Length: 523
Image (cartoon, rainbow, N blue to C red):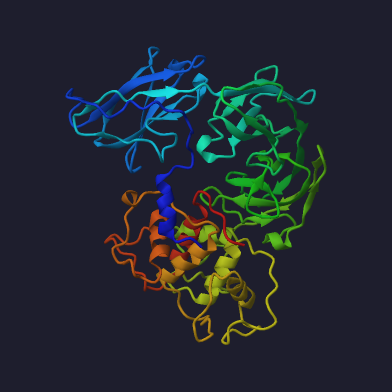
């Protein structure tokens, strides 16, 4: 697993870059003119190849360290532009040209990594930052749909093989009423064209994030015009059913999703009616696991997999035919347990309720949760296994730890944790199941549980913990907790790594962990 700080170096190179031909102005001439008090400006001219409408382009200034706000301005019809009110810093200047028929261009380079930074001081007006926009390639065609199905908001998206060529969402167009589309401003290179369905979910798209089918492969040269890239969309497959709710409950906060073998990535689109009936459209034919998820802030119901299952491993598979409907996928939902020792106004009430609704905890037989007790290592293993979706796992006949017997409570969960290398136990061959979990070790567990741990913030954008020195055993993992906001620490700026984690705080950590963008647990 890559260290956190090795990954942090990637933050300075955005994942979305555009390759371009750039005409250098030869330097960074500075004018003595004065901008608004305490700020500066950048100005110049955008020139373009024939066929490019510069009035449809705009200029963006990216702070070199990524910590400040970006600035943008439309290019005037005469090609001139001025970016005002810039905080003193170094900026990389890009012309977004794809709407104009050209493709994106950087000042002084072909990518942001090779662009020439423009240094702006307080009250300084920098002029002569000129950029040339080259004419891009154009791809066009027609998308047809089955009779009786609307093509409203059917889209075509070009994903470049080279991520520096631009974001797929930039190279995107809707079809017109006749189904025709045109993608202008493509840089030379290889692309995958994906066709996305419209609003009603009646159509099945081709490739893209919602399905695994391959798209249409094309390669374009400089300013090349390619026509006739047509596609006939099929009707989507559908899953339908009914949610039977406890008395007094509503469908507010409920979602129904069809998931593939990874369990975690929903497919298709779900719509739930007030009477509890639902339809999941936009599906490819195949096998799915169907799950009802309840948002705790709006619902007191427990998550459930189809077949009255608490995990994907015990869920009943739903088979969906091509362009057909699989009906009768019904659920009978139950309310999350209420714990006698968790008041409605305690600090972590919602987090504890969320933990119960996810099926991660049922509390103790006496109806308590015991929020202020330290969480033991065996219970932590159980929490993490359930939070991972209770993946199919057969515990070994021989225990990997000399103090964990095959008949021990949570034996399956502990050995699963060991099999995934989330824990290796202690050097003496023990797991110490009844030992408390300290906060630094908890950070390490969650970090290892995350398939691709990363953080999208710069160090200047979050508060690091002052008691997490660089030589600490779990420094990177604790730093990741701060960067992602999974932990905010104490008001005095400390994390207190050697303090045991209480059960109520663990509920909060798990809830924040699963709410982060891009969250996908290791399974």
